[in-house]
Image (cartoon, rainbow, N blue to C red; front, side, top):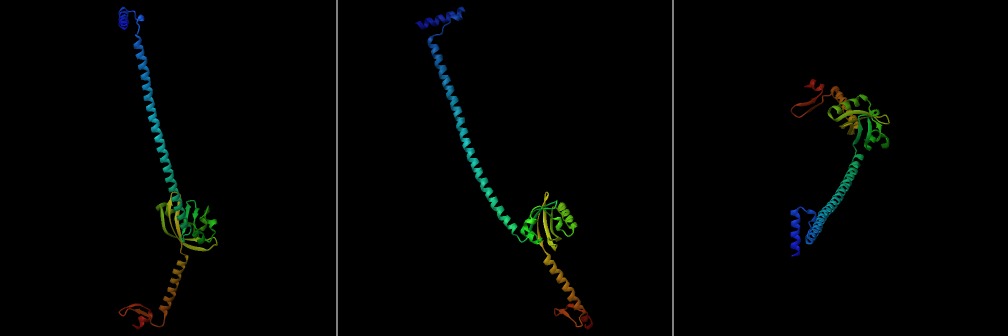
Length: 239
């Protein structure tokens, strides 16, 4: 009954315009406080759950990122080791190859040369492999100009024959095959001096024996039982 009277008094105060005298029932204040506290608790719990979720997801993402980073490092390390082994293997093949392998630039500086190049040029390996000029090696400097011109024009040169002067002033004949990569020239070199001298000797002997064959007093011929394949001047007189 007291609550109803207080409520009725509040209504009368509102209708009469005496708002300041409006009083709120004690039960309503308590409910408001309780709901306010409950709302704040729920709000804080929601915030905690949301933050906790992001923290957990962040931790999971961080763990995943660490795993991926470790996996990437492992792969890079393994790939690096493979490349190092491969480089070591092929470097060994190049350095011990019987064919001369070289790398120079357009300025004429030797950037790399294997042991075969040093042997061909009759020079120490350490002397020729780094920052040595190739201009001094050409018997005819115009050959290098022609060689470079072809490289710039076609990007590649095959079996380019040229004469070189060794460190001991001997002349050798080599075949160059190279390719131009930007400002660097990578190629191979083969010494054909002995082969060329052998061919020249064969031609020389062939000329001598042909002269003897043609000037012989006896008839000399080669036949396959049907026709003459080769015959000298005496055969023409006889037959």
